[in-house]
Image (cartoon, rainbow, N blue to C red; front, side, top):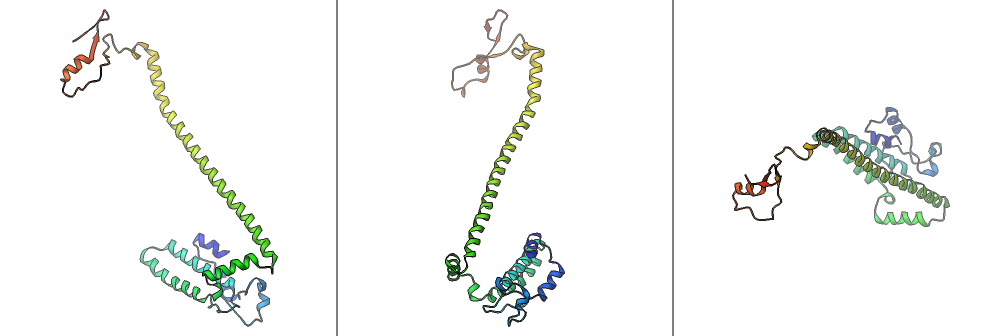
Length: 236
């Protein structure tokens, strides 16, 4: 668990942990996990020593070794750059290849072993606890994954709604001074809201036509008129 934690924090392991990795023997499997049970066994395996390629090799030891390599890789990728990173990664690549070469045949990943493991896990009548554990594991973690995914979707939808509401409020706050200024100006002098002076310029709606070849002055004369005092329009 310490290595898993250090993988994500990119920190060095504690010195005491490194000392124990060199001094404490590894258990063979879950049935002989207690260390006193393997004191007199013929196989003596330690984490930092090469793993034996036989059926007595500790599967937990293989997991711990790859976790340590993974931790070192993450630490190098996070803390080093450029040529220094390439130099530091090279020995880790050698360690990874050595770890893979140390795996016994039944632990190496290929289709034959995968099919054998899946078949044994699904159909083995020897230990019914495996089926109970499998079912409870799927129910527990499957349910948690569904809940987390649903909560994430809800949080994303709520975030979008909050963002849209904030933008709408911000836009309304920006438009409020403009509306207030326009309202006060119209209330102070209602005539100026509709007529700028006694000689208001009115634009007359003209039929659609092509003005490309017309004289601009003639266009102004025909489209703009000034109201006279008696209400009749006269051309300038």
